[in-house]
Image (cartoon, rainbow, N blue to C red):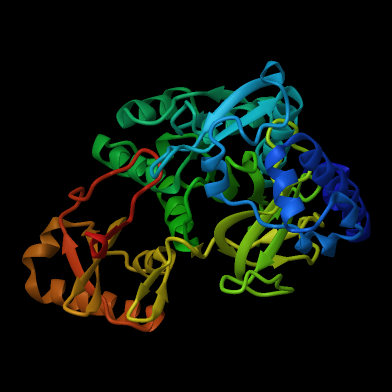
Length: 430
């Protein structure tokens, strides 16, 4: 297994590097971005106050709204002539968040992605098909440049035209697939319709990301494709994919700690937490184009600092449990879509495509889960249908601690997504 020396360095050495880079990053942002100077001056804090890693808690948070309020160039720290790449979020609400990269930023980004690819088992012998949509989204080009850095052959298939995706995988003897987990599952459905079996392919590895997914989803993908399915994490505001990723031991996603300093804060008080689940806050330690200090990701996770079986000493973050801003509160109970997905994947009679609908009936909220059956014949067998609905409903109640309606629908009847799947329809806002 190939990995860089820093990935297996002692904790004290990692923290020494982090502190040196944190001091530089805070001063760099303060000196080059008026937004940070104003924010820190108002908080009565300066770069000189950062004497230990714990001192980072003295600094105010940066939020997605800050990026939108300063759209497009307000947070940039260099002249535009020094920028070689621009990416942006989808802009589903308000202005998009635009991010900028210098040449050094791109080199650092490629290094980070190459690390998570190597950790997952990727090599220069792989032929990798990237089924992310290319464009302003960071996922496709981010993974593309990382795979190229380790010397793999990249097939930039982009998303969509799924039958062609299957044809390319088969004909080119593709060994690794990069996409969202939900799109990979859809590709497997199209394979079945085309009569293509996993044995007809050369796939051995899947690097899936860009949306939260359960361990059950990854097990389903491993079964459908006959691959090792790994999870990775990133966000455009910090760098894109490459913040963290699973190694072959699959016991958490290793964070590239020499480039990104992670914190866990309480979701209510925002106070730092030493252990347990909370909101992930990230600081980019070496970015030039768009420095980001203490960014609230809104992603709920926990961090493990123990050495991994693979030999890496970088901290590992748990799979994203949910988001603090898309967490559903149903009759006072916190519900995450990933919890529901984990339950559904435990039933072989149903597929991986589902929709969660939240309604308000009178003064009470209700939760309904629509999920496809694998065999349409099940829908005409009332006894079997009722039994399956009852079992799913019971399992959901056990996990969620609230009752949810379950509606089983025909195969391929729910909407498919080539990018991030939209699982929740909240009708309470209408």
